[in-house]
Length: 176
Image (tube, rainbow, N blue to C red; front, side):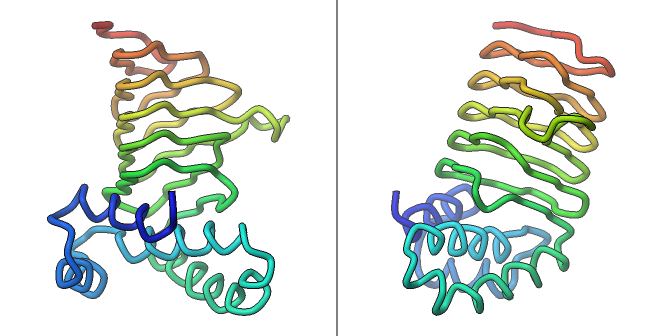
């Protein structure tokens, strides 16, 4: 998907898609991290074009880093993120995954990353996954499509599709 289409899909998770709604959510986000998501998408898109990466890419990256500090979000721009990203609340969100599917929702204080010793073992997130506040997902795990991770959970094993997991360590509460 093109960068603008990804931004429109992110906006569609918040409101109707129009230019006026884009301006409203960009300049008056009401607790949303939509401005960060816009620049996250732009920087990730610019990495695909070498000319743009070295011309306007540095300005875009500066704005992205500023918003990263403002909202308290650390996200690797090399991640392939599907349409419909929703970072509901920033502040303490760390995203370092192999891939994130479509319609991903994450709340504050969530860590998705490697375990302490091996940076190559990072999670893969399926489509329509929701991760609630304070959760930590580490290691080479896969969160299946339509799975939900409860608040303050620690996940170090694969979570099957259509499952609800919670606890530290994780426990499958419901599997539809």
